[in-house]
Length: 134
Image 1 (cartoon, rainbow, N blue to C red):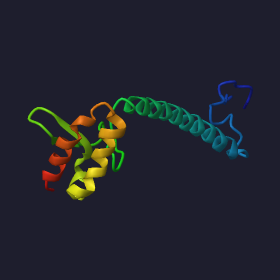
Image 2: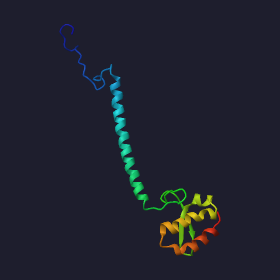
Image 3: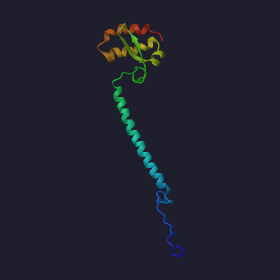
Image 4: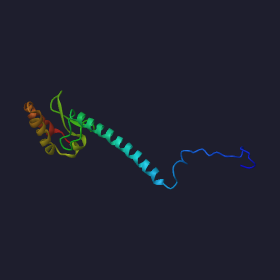
């Protein structure tokens, strides 16, 4: 103050940045790290819940007997053993990669182990599998 004049007196108001001590930049880094951890934790909790829901939903869907991809995510190949009935045991890539003789065990497993009560269809399915060419 010069000559008692109060007009020249300056007031400094604290700001958000000025309240953080310059000597402690690690505090800012720790705060950023904590926020990042919370965000990641939330992401993993949400994605884990989605994964659990997806796995629960995929129990309803069948899957390729060779590579075990769910029909929800992969295209199946249908082998027709009659004019109106077909069976899909393998996905398109697995079906194309295997010969008819190599496909038979997968179809046999589904007919005898998974279906159980439809074993009478095996001769027709076996014939249809052997007739199909890649």
